[in-house]
Image (tube, rainbow, N blue to C red; front, side, top):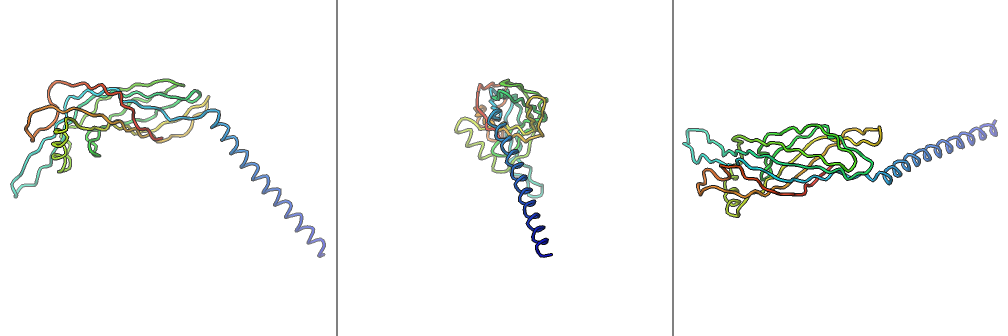
Length: 221
């Protein structure tokens, strides 16, 4: 009886070792396939460029002091601009589906325009896509310190507005399409200020001003 139990124990251990070896071999094979696919395809995130920006209005209005009995009215910023964004797919074997993209403008870390939806786009191998959205922000309440910051920016001659894009992308290899991945794009745009010396309305007003930028953007996927 003792010899038979020892035989069965050895047999079980051999089965466990074989099962463990098979599992490790399977995991190694999967990792090898993933590594080979990565080596062959060399996936690279798209490159975004902010080509130009046409500014129709960039005004911060201050209401000044209000009576103590009334609630204080915040400073507001009005922005109207059209930008041209291009995206280049540097991959030779991978296509990109832009399934959902929203563009908006940010000033000093604060969103100052509504999000504008960009049309869904498929981008083939080494292809370029171009969008020209309008960005609007009408009397957007901003932080109290924004007036002083804009005064300082006016003294320096311009403001740094960030055009940002948030959305989802999918990768396409042959007939296979991946799941959705988040994409975040940040494009700095330096805009010269114009206007009079009235601090109650600082910024750009009047005829549209077009700025040729060709500014590379930071892309995270």
